[in-house]
Image 1 (tube, rainbow, N blue to C red):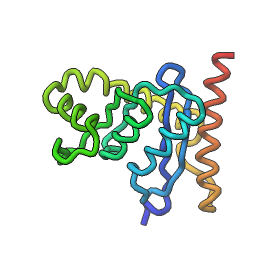
Image 2: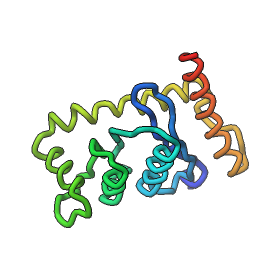
Image 3: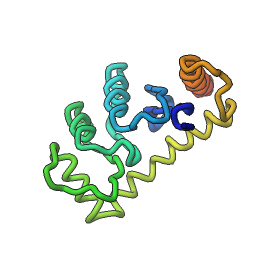
Image 4: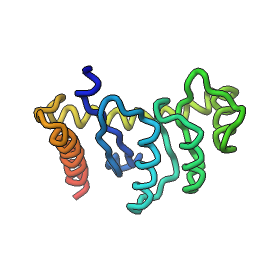
Length: 161
Protein backbone atom coordinates (compact mmCIF):
# COMPACT_ATOMS: atom_id res chain seq x y z
CA UNK A 1 0.00 0.00 0.00
CA UNK A 2 1.01 3.64 -0.24
CA UNK A 3 1.39 3.96 3.56
CA UNK A 4 4.10 1.30 3.50
CA UNK A 5 6.06 3.35 0.97
CA UNK A 6 5.68 6.75 2.63
CA UNK A 7 7.66 7.99 5.59
CA UNK A 8 6.44 9.98 8.57
CA UNK A 9 8.57 12.47 10.41
CA UNK A 10 8.04 12.86 14.15
CA UNK A 11 9.73 15.87 15.74
CA UNK A 12 10.12 17.64 19.06
CA UNK A 13 10.54 21.40 18.68
CA UNK A 14 11.81 24.02 21.14
CA UNK A 15 9.07 26.66 21.35
CA UNK A 16 11.20 29.82 21.39
CA UNK A 17 14.09 28.93 19.08
CA UNK A 18 12.13 26.55 16.82
CA UNK A 19 15.10 24.15 16.86
CA UNK A 20 14.20 20.51 16.34
CA UNK A 21 15.41 18.82 19.54
CA UNK A 22 14.74 15.28 18.37
CA UNK A 23 13.51 13.67 15.15
CA UNK A 24 12.45 10.17 14.20
CA UNK A 25 11.57 8.91 10.73
CA UNK A 26 9.18 5.96 10.54
CA UNK A 27 7.15 4.02 8.02
CA UNK A 28 3.73 5.45 7.29
CA UNK A 29 2.09 2.47 9.00
CA UNK A 30 3.75 3.08 12.40
CA UNK A 31 1.44 4.49 15.06
CA UNK A 32 2.45 7.91 16.46
CA UNK A 33 1.85 7.34 20.17
CA UNK A 34 4.82 5.03 20.96
CA UNK A 35 7.22 7.46 19.26
CA UNK A 36 6.25 10.24 21.68
CA UNK A 37 8.15 8.81 24.67
CA UNK A 38 11.32 8.46 22.58
CA UNK A 39 11.12 12.07 21.42
CA UNK A 40 10.50 13.53 24.87
CA UNK A 41 13.01 11.36 26.73
CA UNK A 42 15.75 11.93 24.18
CA UNK A 43 15.15 15.70 24.21
CA UNK A 44 15.46 15.75 28.01
CA UNK A 45 18.52 13.47 27.90
CA UNK A 46 20.12 15.85 25.37
CA UNK A 47 19.85 18.68 27.89
CA UNK A 48 16.74 20.52 26.76
CA UNK A 49 14.66 21.93 29.61
CA UNK A 50 11.11 21.02 28.66
CA UNK A 51 8.36 22.88 30.50
CA UNK A 52 5.49 22.53 28.02
CA UNK A 53 4.45 19.73 25.68
CA UNK A 54 1.93 20.25 22.90
CA UNK A 55 1.03 17.41 20.54
CA UNK A 56 -1.82 16.32 18.29
CA UNK A 57 -4.26 13.52 19.05
CA UNK A 58 -2.09 10.91 17.33
CA UNK A 59 0.22 11.04 20.36
CA UNK A 60 -2.60 10.88 22.91
CA UNK A 61 -2.27 8.12 25.48
CA UNK A 62 -2.39 7.89 29.23
CA UNK A 63 1.16 6.51 29.18
CA UNK A 64 2.42 9.60 27.37
CA UNK A 65 0.83 11.86 29.97
CA UNK A 66 2.42 9.69 32.69
CA UNK A 67 5.85 9.98 31.03
CA UNK A 68 5.56 13.75 31.05
CA UNK A 69 4.75 13.71 34.76
CA UNK A 70 7.68 11.36 35.40
CA UNK A 71 10.00 13.83 33.64
CA UNK A 72 8.58 16.77 35.63
CA UNK A 73 6.63 18.32 32.75
CA UNK A 74 3.36 19.71 34.12
CA UNK A 75 2.04 21.74 31.16
CA UNK A 76 0.97 18.91 28.87
CA UNK A 77 -1.48 19.57 26.06
CA UNK A 78 -1.84 16.45 23.95
CA UNK A 79 -5.11 16.79 22.07
CA UNK A 80 -7.72 14.22 23.09
CA UNK A 81 -9.52 11.86 20.76
CA UNK A 82 -13.31 11.99 20.63
CA UNK A 83 -13.64 8.76 22.65
CA UNK A 84 -11.34 9.84 25.51
CA UNK A 85 -12.67 9.85 29.05
CA UNK A 86 -11.45 10.52 32.57
CA UNK A 87 -12.12 7.03 33.95
CA UNK A 88 -9.32 4.59 34.77
CA UNK A 89 -6.60 7.13 34.15
CA UNK A 90 -3.07 5.93 34.84
CA UNK A 91 -2.12 9.44 35.64
CA UNK A 92 -3.66 12.33 37.51
CA UNK A 93 -2.24 14.68 34.87
CA UNK A 94 -4.41 12.86 32.26
CA UNK A 95 -7.54 13.41 34.33
CA UNK A 96 -6.66 17.04 35.11
CA UNK A 97 -5.96 17.89 31.48
CA UNK A 98 -9.05 16.01 30.28
CA UNK A 99 -11.19 18.10 32.66
CA UNK A 100 -9.66 21.31 31.32
CA UNK A 101 -10.24 20.06 27.76
CA UNK A 102 -13.92 19.32 28.47
CA UNK A 103 -14.86 21.94 31.05
CA UNK A 104 -12.64 24.89 30.12
CA UNK A 105 -12.06 24.72 26.36
CA UNK A 106 -10.94 28.37 26.20
CA UNK A 107 -8.02 27.67 28.54
CA UNK A 108 -7.17 24.48 26.64
CA UNK A 109 -7.15 26.18 23.24
CA UNK A 110 -5.16 29.15 24.55
CA UNK A 111 -2.24 26.77 25.16
CA UNK A 112 -2.91 24.26 22.37
CA UNK A 113 -2.84 27.04 19.77
CA UNK A 114 0.97 27.02 19.98
CA UNK A 115 0.88 23.82 17.94
CA UNK A 116 1.03 26.11 14.92
CA UNK A 117 4.75 26.42 15.71
CA UNK A 118 5.22 22.73 14.91
CA UNK A 119 3.17 23.03 11.73
CA UNK A 120 5.30 26.04 10.77
CA UNK A 121 8.46 23.97 11.22
CA UNK A 122 7.06 21.23 8.96
CA UNK A 123 6.13 23.88 6.41
CA UNK A 124 9.63 25.38 6.53
CA UNK A 125 11.22 21.96 6.01
CA UNK A 126 9.03 21.42 2.95
CA UNK A 127 9.78 24.92 1.59
CA UNK A 128 13.55 24.63 2.09
CA UNK A 129 13.74 21.14 0.60
CA UNK A 130 11.76 19.15 -1.89
CA UNK A 131 8.34 18.07 -0.68
CA UNK A 132 9.11 14.46 -1.59
CA UNK A 133 11.91 11.94 -1.16
CA UNK A 134 14.15 11.02 -4.09
CA UNK A 135 15.70 7.89 -2.57
CA UNK A 136 14.33 4.50 -3.54
CA UNK A 137 16.01 2.39 -0.84
CA UNK A 138 14.04 2.19 2.43
CA UNK A 139 16.98 3.07 4.68
CA UNK A 140 18.07 5.86 2.36
CA UNK A 141 14.58 7.39 2.51
CA UNK A 142 14.76 7.64 6.30
CA UNK A 143 18.28 9.09 6.12
CA UNK A 144 17.17 11.62 3.50
CA UNK A 145 14.29 12.71 5.72
CA UNK A 146 16.57 13.14 8.73
CA UNK A 147 19.06 15.09 6.61
CA UNK A 148 16.26 17.52 5.77
CA UNK A 149 15.84 18.03 9.53
CA UNK A 150 19.56 18.69 9.87
CA UNK A 151 19.47 21.24 7.04
CA UNK A 152 16.51 22.96 8.72
CA UNK A 153 18.32 23.10 12.09
CA UNK A 154 21.47 24.46 10.48
CA UNK A 155 19.51 27.30 8.86
CA UNK A 156 17.90 28.15 12.23
CA UNK A 157 21.27 28.07 14.00
CA UNK A 158 22.69 30.24 11.20
CA UNK A 159 20.12 32.93 12.01
CA UNK A 160 21.41 33.15 15.59
CA UNK A 161 25.14 33.18 14.67
